[in-house]
Length: 411
Ligand code: NAD
Image 1: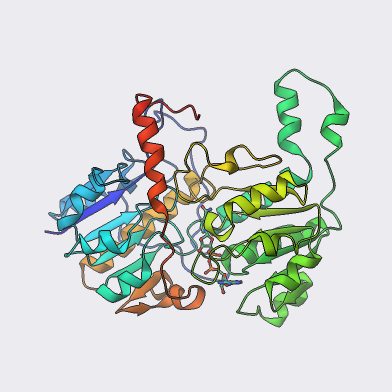
Image 2: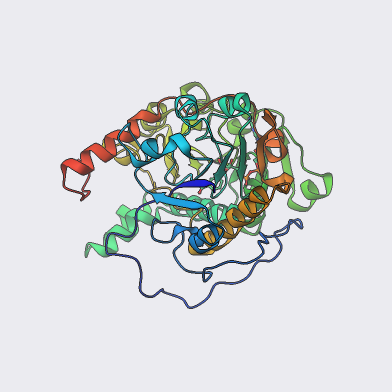
């Protein structure tokens, strides 16, 4: 019997949905480029249902309990008195999501002597101290590609909404106003703009492909250069360093993982190398940007806008400056957890568990750490190290929520 400890985000405030906006979701058996979508032996859920929250359980309970394993699901993840911390000591497998990350620090890894596998239900395993996982021989795996297109769509939406000044115009409509000049005095066309991505992997390339029909000039920087045919097809300009790219771009979109080489990459120095009036879109990880440098550059009118769905830590404290800075289009971390994405990453987690529990190899493209070193997707996209420092602030959100009796209204 294996104990599997799973941390998922809370159920909807109004209760678990009894019906959905749509009756089905399109199937995506193969991803762009040919990678096969998750292929577990079976699934015990209906694609399109809410699976990522506590009651959704990633559709795993029947499968795991049917095999005699213990499966514990909680949203209580931060602080010494959290269910997660209390239940760690005999857990062999931990499942967590970037949207509601159970930070697996070296301390917590030390408190879990039986731990053998950390699974990310989604993409991006920076909430695990990868250094400590290597040292302990713990396998870290994620469901690569499961939500890459979901995020690319969100990034494109955010680029358009910032450049076109959509959100303030929408607010105007909702509030009963009609002042066209207020809406249009910050509104531009994306056509003709120079747009660059930091990282041109699954998400970055998908963003570039989606922006091509807008007649933009496209740029990228990445330690792995794309094939010449792709550069030609999309008319891409390659930069061998991020500084060279940001100097010429009107819009910069960040699509690389958080690892020691990208932590606080967008600090004051780099942001002020961007053109005045640039837009910065970050759907990768909050910590790739310096929190105060972003807020200051907006107040200073150096950046024209900032949008994204990733923060550090998560959940973001109520007084996080990105909640209140000017000209932002932030959402909570939602881009990679559409109902469409949930069906894919829930199936991917099931596939990983089926393999692990049967002693079979996990697909290489899902691996981040194995046998004491970076492996698979981890070798391709990460550098070794730890980026979880400072996660303790997430506890503040829970503490304030408790003080408010469970409701959440900000400060
Ligand atoms: P990927 O591995 O396919 O691509 C990442 C690319 O970034 C790789 O090509 C890699 O070489 C490049 N890269 C790494 N370090 C770099 C650096 N210093 N400078 C430039 N490029 C660098 O991964 P992906 O599927 O495209 O996802 C990328 C990241 O997006 C994830 O690691 C995760 O942090 C984030 N993500 C966010 C969400 C969300 O819901 N917001 C969902 C999925 C992924």
